Image (cartoon, rainbow, N blue to C red; front, side, top):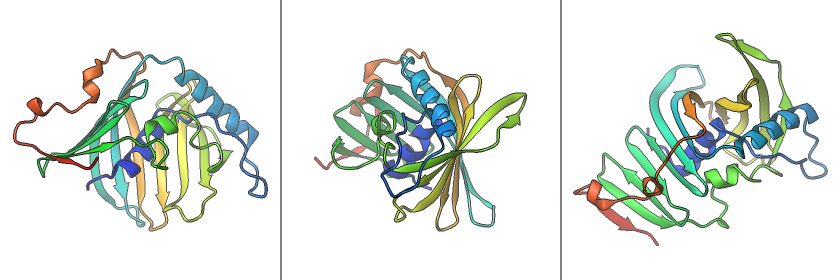
Length: 224
């Protein structure tokens, strides 16, 4: 179960926050103002974080609800830098270069970060990526283990997307997204749940670049 950077960043980053959402283009319907209040609160809270370190679990289910796989991982983020680690894969970005390390293949692909390419990165998710891409509506609050969560359902305006719905749960007390469920058109569902999160983490800058000396025997494939 190898995750592409596109799928991984789209879902993993949503666990932590969603940026400030604007109204959809004219003719595409309207989003729920109450849902926007929740998302705006999440965005405002995110801006107060120094750096983020979170541990999460990923569960994939098929259309019948059968679990296809479970993985755990961590995500670090600081300014424009990020690092994602999940079973069998690590992705580093120092704000300029991206290294995608496949543990089993013992190879790392190196590419340049292109913010104009349309690829999904945490930085876009944490700024204005969704401003015109989603409609959203507020659902009923739910309670888990004594905590109350706000539920927001997002629907992509572009119906050619591989997914048709995303449901997020926001901790009402902290305004932090604690789980994200992505519903794909093929019936698969991807559930990411935060197990722990430190929003004031101390993270060294060299954590966001791939150091070949720490990974002896790994083949480097430069795609730049």
